[in-house]
Amino acid sequence: AEWQAVNEYHDILYHKWNGIAKITINRPEKRNAFRPQTVNEMFHAFCDAREDQSIGVILLTGAGPHTDGKYAFCSGGDQSVRGHAGYVGDDGVPRLNVLDLQKMIRSIPKVVISLVAGYAIGGGHVLHVICDMTIAADNAIFGQTGPRVGSFDGGFGASFLARMVGQKKAREIWYTCRQYNAQEALDMGLVNAVVPVEQLEAEGVKWAREVLQHSPTAIRCLKSAFNADLDGQAGIQELAGNATYLYYMTEEGTEGKRSFLEKRKPDFSKYPWMP
Ligand code: 2NE
Image (cartoon, rainbow, N blue to C red; front, side, top):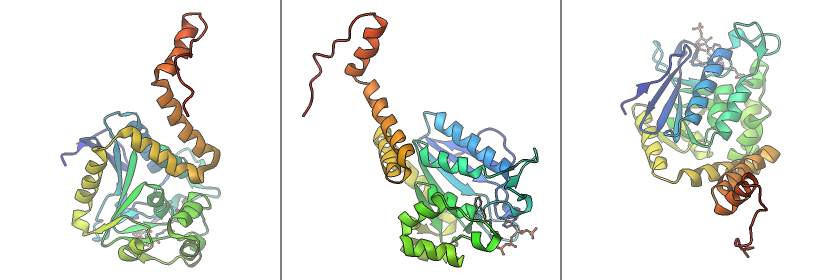
């Protein structure tokens, strides 16, 4: 892929090529732990990818290897800036703004694929869980650490993980804080595929290009349908928003708007009450 760099960020890299956006967490010296700025920059890049009608797939990955030869997708919240009530940025305010990023990844009507080489740990593990699909390198390591470092993610990090790997396994992952290798992750349904680390990006691009051949509206509706099951009223809102989107494109829907603007009664008589 001939990636074009987009925008200048500090904590991330952002590229685009042929319908694919690539967001790379770029703090390898911290195993790609995120601080509030990292999350803000990722959120900004996701907003850009959402608005860009040429983009259908977003690859989320971590820069590496670090100078010590080790890889990381993301090691979660940067513990060195964790204050009394969250992660503290330049404004001195403690936050958990990664939750906004999680919601963005979940609801963006495009396919988000995480490419995990090395550690996907803690809040970094939750990020890959939320992505539509995960491709793991053979050196990937997965796990939660919350109960060890005084944290937990009781949102998607618990409930969506349990939907994915089952209640027993999800509880094991959180209560024991064990680490799992790529094969174990594949076996428990936590990832879609495992490839040699040097092939990780190429494999991600291959999957993205397969997705990009298909109907954007079908995939948009499917993503909201998969979400609706778990997301309650917010999930129904997403799914229903797609129904409205499609209805606006019909002649019947347009008649309602046109009649209002033409100051006449709407005439829906030619539209059948379908069985
Ligand atoms: C990721 C892991 C297992 C890697 O171990 P290893 O042995 O390969 O590397 P090492 O030496 O631990 O880490 C290398 C450098 O990265 C920093 C380390 O402090 C170290 O720095 P130096 O000593 O070289 O200066 N580093 C790594 N992870 C960091 C982090 N998260 N924050 C700040 N610095 C970090 C191992 O490093 C590890 O276990 N890391 C911590 C994982 C963790 O507990 N993350 C937070 C979980 S809580 C969370 O993310 C969260 C949540 O629960 C709810 C909401 C939002 C976030």
